[in-house]
Length: 275
Length: 278
Figure 1 (cartoon, rainbow over the protein chains, first blue to last red):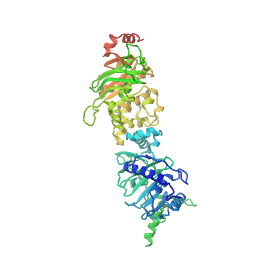
Figure 2 (cartoon, rainbow over the protein chains, first blue to last red):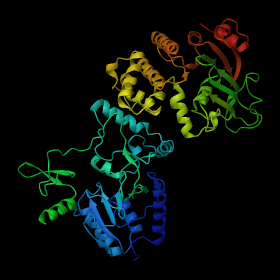
Figure 3 (cartoon, rainbow over the protein chains, first blue to last red):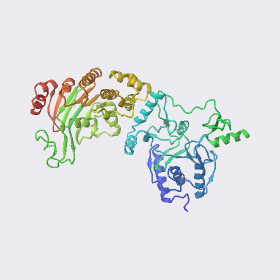
Figure 4 (tube, chains in turn green, cyan):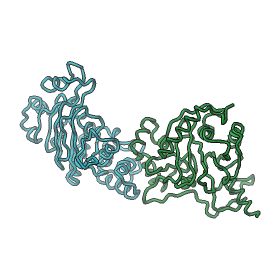
């Protein structure tokens, strides 16, 4: 078995695509997505990026919707561990590579860290223009009017955008980008982030990136505010946090409880409390 | 000059050196005998002054619509130069729009010119509401403020006599004449310097035709944009335009003031055309 499962040629090709993606922030780069022991569409894009860049000195953290313990995260972590023997962790601060699905950790990321996103649909224009050739032309032309019209129509009919996740962002004033299905709440963490952010779509064979300290802003009208999920008056039933993204959970009696979506953040809050 | 076309040609097919010489009105053919290419537009020279209205008439297949599409860059000309006022390159010099890159082209199509097609399906996006369609054009011309976009859409819908309460309805719920008026609102919303109209009223009933022509004329007087109108209906041409060119087999065979051409046609084809009015 080769180190990190992929053969060296494959890793080289993925790294090359990564370099191009980092050089042109927000631009979608094609790559030859390899077969993996996981079905395509189950995080194979993020997995290939992680495998192509991981080495013995890395510490790996894998999360699925903020949770280190969900099936997808556990399986991917076990797989990478079995083919690389790197140290794994659930602690956001300790990790050097964090592979994630649908969330950005609550704890602010640092310069030495890399955040790898699993992406189902890489091109944000997919929603308004199904033709791939035309999508490329629109990107080349920086013509995002159709996304704007979608925003206009939502604003005129509902007062605000109806998009709850995968909210379109403009990267480095140039490319409109799909940030993967992270909630609107996380959209603001993409910009000026200290860590390197990489996006991999295995099924769609695409890679794109946001280098550290890049300007990333959500698409919004100049005279309208960008609103995110509001948890005012609610707090985590476990750690008491009021400043994190909360999950709404119903118990058998039909009562509503709120918990931190990011389990590591919740745990670290409890630890601080213990001290 | 707001629009200046020099030696513009469009050839469909192999483009051999003899294409332009051996086709045209004198040969009564648009097909090159050597290479069998179809010559859509053959060496056309045209100029248009600020606020002037130009009509293009001619039979089917004479290249009227193709000429319009060459100006709007729906199709790329094979040969020639087209200059549009305020369209300049990086050096500040006038730039041939045939040499324009994608970004410059979108500026050209979104801010300097607008096109109104015969079929509103070509000019409107039926997945967007009436207001959304107008918003698209306004956004493309660079405005990113919701309130301004909305009020602009309302303003032009009111101007074109569409009930403003229907701003969020989709185009397919409007009648044909109303759809055409939405298309006009959309085209005008970006404040174009040149408005191109390709058979704007063909297929509409006579009373609606008259209303739309009056509307276009009124708006033209009020805003003062230049227009190029393509039509095979001489009534439309007479009603709207100051100067007229007559096309046949891709060439301009006669050019002059509209009333002069209609009252005293010189070219045999124009004579035939004018005498054919019912």
